[in-house]
Amino acid sequence: MKILHAYILKELAKIILICVLIFSAIYIIIDFVQKIDRLIESGVDNILIFKYFLLKIPFILVQMVPPATLLSIIIMISMMKKKNEIIAIKACGIDIFSLAKLMLFYGLLLVSLVFLISEYIVPYTNSKVNDIWNYEVEKRSSGHFYGRDQIWYRAKNRIYWIKHYDYYDNILQGASFYFFDDDFRVIKKVDGNKGVWENGQWIIKDGVMQVIDEDGEYKFERFDEHILDIPETPETFVKEMKDSEELGFFKMREVAEKMESEGYDNTRYIVDMNMKVAYPVIIVIMVMIGFAVPLMQRQVRIPLSVIAGILISFLYMVALGFSRSLGLSGVFPPFLAAWFANFLFLLVGAYLMSSVDR
Image: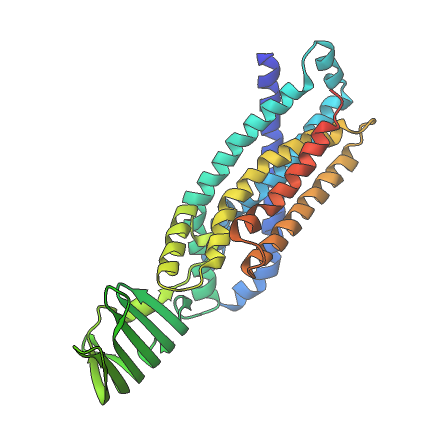
């Protein structure tokens, strides 16, 4: 039994590696053809072009492992069935599902490996890839930011609303500043048409200030200029918005919590944070489907099985993209948006496995 398991794992690892390399090569070739004209037009040197595609490899590998695993298991089980090895295993009294358990265990190892790569390697390489494309190729200014319009900022005993913030010149347009006591009662409010950052402080211009007095009445005061004594600096309202691919699960959770505490919409980060876990887990489900598809056929048809595997991978990506869009629009809660496709294909995998003749 141990020899059989060792043989299966060795052969499966070899097929998965070949499939991952083939899929990755196809991905890079297509990406190269699509972007090479723009890279050449931008005037970047060949070394930077090589570096750009080299740094994309970890992300591509992570994306290719689930479909490669599915096709690898389909090919391996189909070949074993064609050589009558499946019949021989059953004749020896070995439960065919023991092979499925072995492959599922192997799939769990792949899940862990893919998650670790996407957590610690992919964010760094994707950040470098985006920097090359945005700053060297597209010649954009550094960063793209959230919080430029309709900013709600919340701090301890303070809430700010800013209609527009010009982060290049550090100018606030149409700002209101609310200050509260411990009972969440407004004790001071400052409204200004304009605010500028000068000499390390905010100066609010052409506005109105309301301050509560000892009798609980509000006093109104108009001003041309008012120095606003708050700890927030221009950097507080300018938050560089990183792409989800540039963040790991734990860093994305940290950013999402910070955005929520400051009053910003963090839906996209919450959805993508859940997908950081959901996507690697699909490997285990692909193992179930890949194991069952060839065994359900009476005659061995490897090309047909491979086509079925490609179709299943495509349908999963469509379902994943669709559920993510529903999550971003608020129709699905973030957790369901990330895991809907997995739950759907888990049911498919369970049904196919129950149909296999043991």
